[in-house]
Length: 351
Image 1 (cartoon, one colour):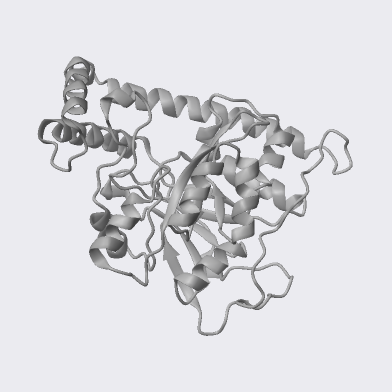
Image 2 (cartoon, rainbow, N blue to C red):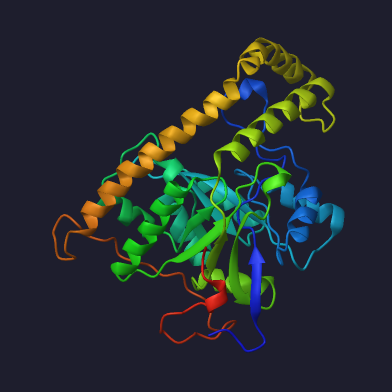
């Protein structure tokens, strides 16, 4: 158990800054968030987060910018959301990695093309890794239930409370974590807002018994965490999309942060003007609705497949779990805890 001096610390483990780029239609030069790193940090603290981190897509530039401006912050650690591919299922996954540095970021970038090579590296380095918003990662790919459990079982952590996902998607992630535990695979559960505007920062978070950022990261390694907060509601999601679109047009018009080169800005401006009529006919709202419909459909399908897979016995030849490699914690630094299952305090149980 945690030491008597420990308390419940909160951290929103899924939040973005303006350094997160939008991969769709790169000619637009758009980003999926326009919040300044310092703004995100201050908002997270104001919303009750004891610790803060950023998980921008495949970059730690937002983290480095904050540390360059503010110096070392004892309540901040570097993280990112890695876009990784699983060669066996063909899925493109988003992986939250926490407590890294520039060297590790470089290695992660090199290995992210194969998640089955990336995860053993993270395990060796003692880096907590979470499978993020699994429901939205399965929209284009139908993975048999048993293979889905095998895939999730590669991860020490599963994000079961994402503030930008509807309840059905978060429920699928929770059921997946339950399936792993029924197969004697310990798994930690995390939560984060997945905020792409400052308005939703801290709507979901992760709690752990800890005293500082180091012991919080150890709690992640030991899978002793509890997700809290809300699932997404449709109206706030649509509002966020329009906020991002409006900020994008301002960014193209004034280029206040220097996101565009002169040539890139001209191309982006031409594309923005061409797409402007589509925004007037509510294309962002329609796109959001279609995306949510597809995620819900995928979550239902995979939920049914998962239920069928869990009805098979452990000895069933078509349901073979991968061999489990637990993340090791150096004994010289941290004492090994008793093997009994950790039970969170009553007041910290997930919503």
